[in-house]
Image 1 (cartoon, rainbow, N blue to C red):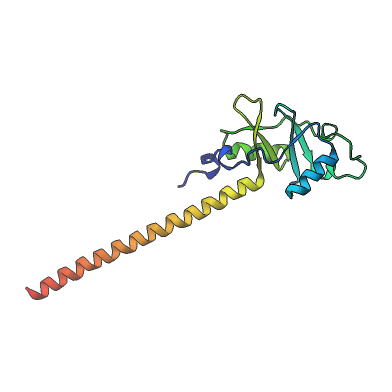
Image 2 (image 1 turned 90 degrees about the vertical axis):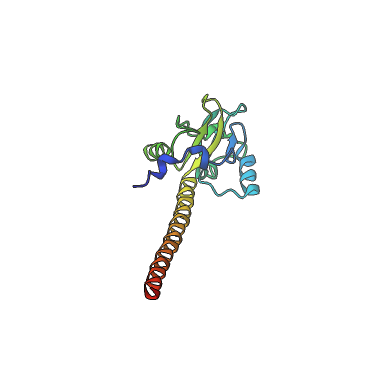
Length: 168
């Protein structure tokens, strides 16, 4: 039996580092420009204050809603969910929180729980599975080659014994 991949990998190993964090006091216009310039295609963004403390999650559809004026601040739009995960938690714990809270993204906070150190999305988790699948393929092929080599060695020994019996 192989250990559970979700228990082996920590959030820190697969998270994005501060890539999607928006500032609480940005306007919708500033944020929209930033998203277009960086070509971000996320459905959710994590919002923090000036010190980097987690403030909430912003849904992109809410950000782009026509009824919101361009000068409206993000702090007026965020969902103040008090959900997060520490960087040393397992992916299993992260998935449990994401499922329970029905969210696609989690802010990853420092051990002292004061600042955001990264973002974890379901895409990061799927990518970790992809890496594990590739590692498993390499592992199995190397075992297979080793085994074939041993079989050839055993056959060679048998042939050698057979040949030496014929001579004697």
